[in-house]
Every structure is written in structure tokens, then in C-alpha cells.
Length: 343
Image (cartoon, rainbow, N blue to C red; front, side):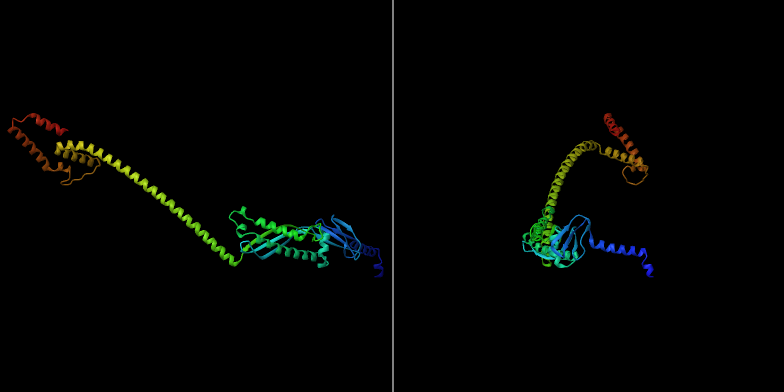
């Protein structure tokens, strides 16, 4: 067993382990997104900052120690902070802030007392930024509620409020070149949500209902006025059309009566002939439709009665007798009668 441990492989493995421990103690790596603070015996005053990424050399602990900080953006959010607006309305503001480490050495000097690791430093810095953000939200008192919320999105002053909060936060973080700097940079501030308190919600809802009722009443009044105008215009148009129709009907009636008067006058010269012609027209129309009706006493159907032929014959014989008895009557009267019958 002792001979096995003394083989060359054992010495190679042991040498590799010793070399790895020495390399770990004398080197460190700086990623591209981090900055490293190298301290001497833990004193920040003698610390240096490595900003270029890659493999670096250092003395082993406790001579030198390395603390790396991620310089990417960090997010801090605050919720449920009640603020008062300039018009004495209570609102609950939820906001966020984006920050990052701008000066690793200053950041280490300000927050290294929170613990040995970088996570402890970040936690302390996050609490500081969150406290400053809560305090900065007090600038909401310089804005009215109707300025923050308008029907026109471009008229809202929410961007102005966010800019005011950002200015306060940057002032609290301090100038990076000044002694009061925290070594952090506030990049941006935004408002996630603004809620009304329960009391203000009821008041706002009541005002919204009143506004909507006023708008509805105005719309109804406008609609009624438009409807009344349409009804008036329709009534006027109807009266004008009715008057025109009445005048046209009177003109047509007068023309018809005038034309009918000529025919009535002609019919009055020989009523029996007019009746006979009307009956013949009726028969012509009835037979043209291929309908055969035999009705006693109906106009035109008296020609179908046997007694009508007898009466006609008797009438002719009577007319002949009368002609014989009155030889002095002019023949022209019978000719005119015959002519009238033909007509």
C-alpha cells in the first residue's frame, strides 16, 4: 500500500491539487457584466477596481480579497403607498425604479458594513433605494387628480410626475463625484398603477354617474329636438303634397266632368237609345269573357226574353199603323229616327 502511494501518478495528482489551490488563491475572474473591488486586509481605503473582464492575479486571503458587483439594471418596486394630491384626493400609488452600480468602490464603501458578501450589499442598497422611492412619491401632492387622469391620454401629467420622482431619487443617490454619493445610478422611474381609496372611489363613481347622466340628458334633448324638426318637416311636406294632390284631383275632376257633360248631353237627347247601347256594351263585355249568365231582369239580358221580341214586333206594327193613320207626317222624321238608331 505504501509503495502504491509512492507511485509517480500519486505525485502528479497531489501536485495538480496543490497547483489548483495555489491558482485559486492567487487568481480571480472578472465577468463582462461585473466589476471587482480588490481590498487589502479588508480596508476599503486601499481598495482598487478591476473593470476589464478576464483572469486576474491577486495575493491570497487575508492579504487581498475580491468582491464582485453586477453592473446590470436592478429593479425595486413599492406598492400600496397612499399619497395626497393637490386637490385633497387620496390615491394609492404603485411605482418602480431601475438602478445599477455606477461606482463599485463607492458602493463598497457605503454598503460593505451590511455583510461580507455582495448579496448583503445589494440587499442594503435595495432597501435604501426603496425607502428613497417611498419618500420621493410625496411629490404627488403637487399634481391634481384631474391632471393625472384625463380623457385625452396626451394631456395627462403622469410623465411629469414620473420625472419629478426620478429627480428626487437622483438627488438622494447623490452626485457620483461628491462625497455623499451612494455609488449607484437611478436609471428610470415608472408608475405601475394608481388606485383610489374606498372613500374617493365612491365620490369618483358618483361624479362619473352625474357626468354620464348629464351627457345622456343632453343626448336625449338633442335627439328630441332633431325628432321634432323631422316631424315638422314631414308634416309640412305632407300638407304640401296633399294640397297639390287636391288641386290636381279638382282639375282632373273638372276636366272629367266637362268631357262627361258632352256625352251626357248626347245621351239625354235619346235616353232609350243610350240605355240600349249601354246594355249592348255590357253583353259584349260579358260574352268576351266566355261567361254565360241568364238572369231575369238584368240589364242587357232582356234581349233573351221571348216577350221582348213580341213587344218589339208589336211596337213596329203599332208604329206602322200610326204611320197609316197619319199620312200627313213627314217621312224625314222616320229617317232621322232610323239614323238615330244606327248612331
